[in-house]
Image (tube, rainbow, N blue to C red; front, side, top):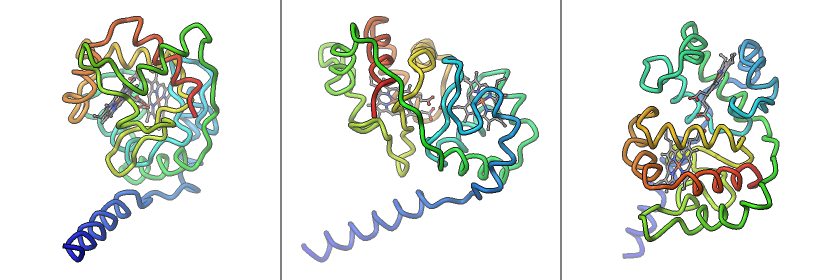
Length: 203
Ligand code: HEC
Ligand code: HEC
């Protein structure tokens, strides 16, 4: 029994480690990210709340999103243009650079923080909304091995836009189809606003 448990844990850790291992070169990525800085900020902390912060986001998740923008699975005309000339290596290097940066943390709206925290930590059992914490982590750090993105400190406006995108089916892909789309479509506007505000201050 014990041997099997030990073996499975070793195998799981081996794969987790491998997935999390950096494939990109952050130093090279810094130069390649020059054309992204106007919107996402030099260090990946954007100013405009409609443009996501990329600082501290997981490398694998960023690479995946760039790929989705390119093949149109995630439909956004600005980003489609931006990835058109990126090679796979470029994407990996840029992703490694942003992953190595530190996200700035905003503040939650005091009026919404309590309700937002409840949704984040406990979900809404009545309507079948799973706790965000279960996948995105108690502090919003996400889970790189499972490709669950970090959310901490992200602009509330951007989060809100994505939640509505998932709910309406505008943002569709792979995992999101099953997890985020179903979940977001069960949420009220007030729940989305509150949890987005809470995430902006989460760290
Ligand atoms: C003109 C502004 C602009 C520029 C320049 C730009 N982006 Fe974006 N980016 C956006 C917007 C807006 C979104 C949100 C799209 C959406 O709502 O789906 C976005 C989304 C992203 C996302 C998804 C983030 C997430 O959390 O899912 C990544 C990754 C990204 N951009 C990387 C890049 C890279 C790499 C470059 C440079 C090669 C770049 N962007 C250049 C505006 C820009
Ligand atoms: C069962 C796991 C799971 C749960 C629970 C979950 N998420 Fe997610 N979430 C994901 C996955 C997987 C993705 C990545 C989807 C993709 O690749 O586009 C994601 C993506 C997101 C994104 C897009 C991030 C970005 O940078 O664009 C937001 C916002 C988000 N989730 C918010 C939430 C909120 C708010 C809750 C709770 C109400 C929640 N999630 C609960 C798995 C989950």
